[in-house]
Image (cartoon, rainbow, N blue to C red; front, side, top):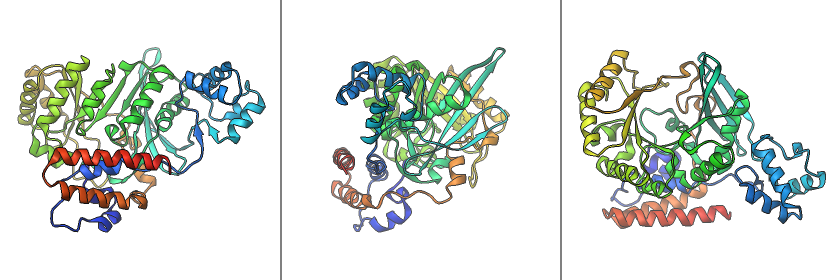
Length: 437
């Protein structure tokens, strides 16, 4: 997933290629790229994502009684209305004042809907800046009907990390999603299925840890306001330095899913480019500490790629890696979901069973994900790429940032801790400037 500066935007990369012979340490600059990406230019203020207390304060700010804030909360999270004009129990004057001040609900139109034979539904939402994002509704049926509905949500418009097997990275990266743009995906799934979402997985487009602030804000809203239990929410990551520690500090009861995809550093670097700046031993140490701090089991996602990482020998190596890292782990095997123009192939059922059996023999808890929506372009990024043929490019205003990032990489040399501190500081400053733009 993580990319070099060149992969954030190819035309942009040629413009800012470091003049020095010293190469920028891979992937640090791409993290700056992701965290500094702009929000859409808009004067609108969004109701979706605000807590009941915040909505009550908003009502007071407009000269209304606090119970009007409770009504706003009801319209947003119980009735789940899309437009302020439909808040019929609010005085017309209050509605007009809210809209006149630039307030809106913050719901995006559904641009495209594709339904698979197994009932999986993939939606494309068209955001305010005309970007497209994917969200997927995955139903589970029992004898009485729909028993569980999982929403797979995106955290970014595209992804800067470009894992070699992932369709999202092929479509480029534009920006982080805002809090309400994450929450609205769950509401859109509920609207289509006419059923409450029971589970949420941050496994759609993007790297959640590169947008951790908005992801945590959306997590709070989904838990407290949309009323989805923390244990029913999973946050996935391919691994971004220092972010697992940050997530652990929040002591959430949600599941952390780490996209591993290889049992050793050398192979992982070929599948997940970000591994070059986040070695496997450091990642496993952070996962062990996460389990110790939260008492929540870590799940390892492992995409099985035929002839690449799916041998019994790979399984034995993976088991050894996990046993060496401690306990409290679970492996979720994911047979590759074929995508266009990919050199990878889906492994045979026999290979999947052999890999799973080898892990079980080594006393590793393992499950095999049942593939859903193969006929609906359900692999992450596939449907968006169908409608958006040209990869997204970053905002030209970020040119200066990439240039400075390259200079920082050259200045800091091989001193990785100092480089990370400098780039983190740059990201914070640039995010603040963007917010006031």
